[in-house]
Image (cartoon, rainbow, N blue to C red; front, side):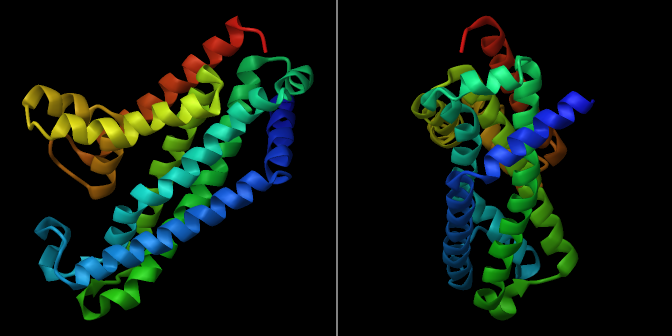
Length: 253
């Protein structure tokens, strides 16, 4: 336990002494604010789907949920660079000299990434909702409990997505290939599979991390309950971390 705490402390210090984390969090806030403002304007013009406007009003948190599709890119970049930058710069050798256990190192990185993303992701979700409130005007549903619940959901979604990116970064090692694979699974493949509207392709799309996360965030009941979407995303995160551990265990730095 003491060794694990020391490993987490080392990774925590390393993260906050780099500029990457500040640029990524700043970018996430700007992307969320811009996206939330845009979607709030759409809502004011009546351009949102009817299912996003229960009782004719638009929850401010729903606007933040829509905008997270843009802001998530900054969190993904931050998470994957925590792992891949070590290989790109060669500092992984020094890191492994300090923390020889590959599993402990990967878990420490995941713990740090998860903590930072949960707090920052929830804060960014609140920011998106607060940006939307004045733009929605009387059309908005600004109940605090709903707004905070949506923000916490965004934080949970981004946390699992970040852990997924960290594990994938450990498995693939390169920043470019890791980012490409994450974007394919989260952003690119889902609409390609859903456009033909074939049951088998829709089922495949529903099993991908991005779609599962969206089902959770939107509270869908079809094709599965929202909590199942969160569990599907968690399964992808665990699988990525296990794949990363296996590669780190069997390959030299």
